Length: 68
Image (tube, rainbow, N blue to C red; front, side, top):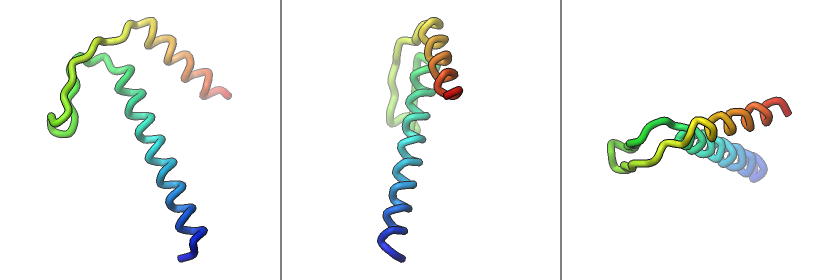
């Protein structure tokens, strides 16, 4: 396998991973849950739920970005 192909595979993999992480944390930030447990309860947190105005503003911003 050539070096250019390896670099392309690594670049695509890194971009895909970054997109997944961004999507995960965006969905977590808009979550309505107060108690979050991940990885078979290895990571557990209690958090304040964001207000409806903040969620509506974020959805509006995401909608504007999709139209660009």
